[in-house]
Amino acid sequence: MFENENKDFSEHLVAINRVAKVVKGGRRFGFAAIMIVGDNKGRVGYGTGKAKEVPEAVRKASENAKSKMVRVSLKDNRTIHHDVVGRYGAGKVILRSAAPGTGIIAGGAMRALFESLGIKDVVAKSTGTSNPHNMLKATFDAFKKSESPKSVAAKRSKKVTDIIKNKNSEGLSS
Image (spheres, rainbow, N blue to C red):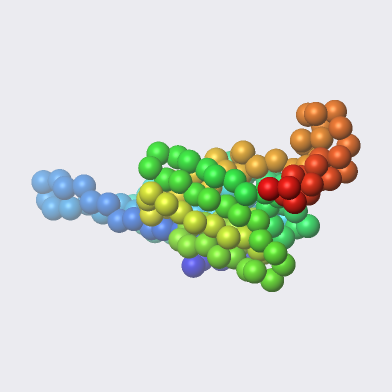
């Protein structure tokens, strides 16, 4: 795992793939990299880069990730607000909020994503595929679907306390 602290961003190298192009004289090798960049405070992005050499591919992927950063609302700066499912292609991820002290229970590319995002407690399961591209895109789809109580209250023209109170009373009756 590659970590670099520049400008308060943590960078995680998720995967490097070596690809070959067969030409008249033999094979020409190239490299594709997937990077995750986050600020550990709720902003994260992922990017890909291709080049003839690994360091250049990593640099390109890092720049691509910084340009595609999104903000994710966190509950108490440690977990997500509610359970959510994300899909992309054959990838499906299930993200569940967790109690304090649970830690990051996730595998593959999702673990690096949560660490860069600043999430400390989450339970995540990936079903369908282990392809890091699709897992990351499905996780970002899940983040897009997740909403904070503040945004839900604004949409419904209610107070945040009404939303949280309703959520707690529904959980007790079920």
